Image 1 (cartoon, rainbow, N blue to C red):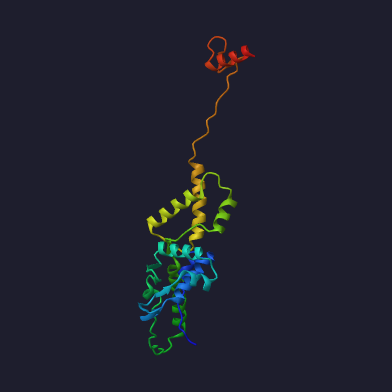
Image 2 (cartoon, rainbow, N blue to C red):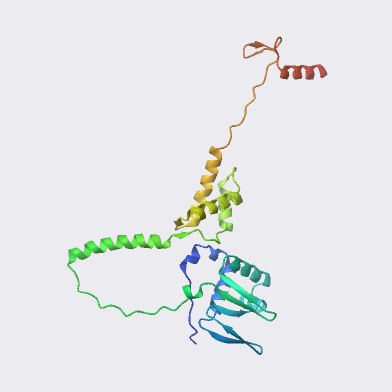
Length: 251
């Protein structure tokens, strides 16, 4: 039975949700459960109007259908609400989950009639244009893949393992990652691979911390039996000489 389809956008890869299997499974569950058109749902003897992107939700039913514990479901809901991917409306009998920007990402596309192919141009001109077009397409693909740092950016277990393997001694992963996020969200630049950018940021943070570290103080010991810097310890000895003499007397 044909029941339609949903769209999964590749920008989800930038948010690293695939590494969190519980979150990704629940997010796909929400997309699949949401209605694609306005309709009336019945809950017991009550009729509930639903708009595109909404569905009736029950935590115990979702836990059974996803084979998850209820607390994992709640944790996923809290995360998606904080990242502004869903909103919830709760009554004493049920809840309604709404997918934010449903019409932006899940709207059905209307196929446009294809234009008739034009006559072929001269072979040499075609080859020249093809080369330029390929270069332009590569640049467009690279720009289209670049995104700004997502609000849901977080350190995964694999990133934590990489950080510990580097042997960094002067920075903490929490403080360095917080500065990293503040900087890139502040400047608003887009990157293709944010995990690689984060790794490079951690290396730079360690390097700059080492470079800006204050120099260690070195203390020169005074020799009470001889001279230090051309002075005799007998006539003008320092306070360290008197302390040393006291220790000798007590011994």
